[in-house]
Amino acid sequence: MIKLINYNTDLEAQSLIALRQTFTNDDETEIIPKIESSDSNSITFMGQLLRQFINLCDAKQYIYIEWMHGWYDSSGIEIMGLDLMTKLHKCFGVLGLSGLDKLLSCAVHNRLKVLTI
Image (cartoon, rainbow, N blue to C red):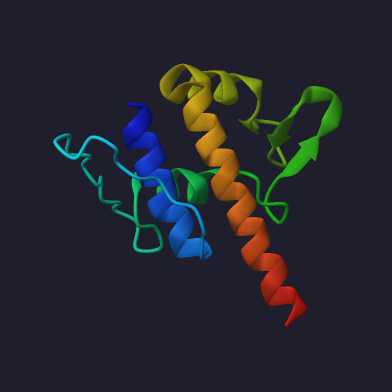
């Protein structure tokens, strides 16, 4: 699971920015599958997760309420909060969340580079 998440995170990160250090498979006999994304904007499942995460945090559609620790729509329904983050942690673990954090950092870097041009 560790190699699968690292590999797919690095593939997606390479599509966002040019990375100097990438994941290498030390055990050449072990095949790491590249899980294709059904989203045309993403290369892997980690990229698709990133895109959905960004969509759920869209400030044009939803509002972040700090004291409730979550994103809510105009009718007060929680869109993303601690419950969703707990479920993500149970599914992907710390490694998956750190991979998502890496991809978010790459996406922010990409957007800042576009703004400074």
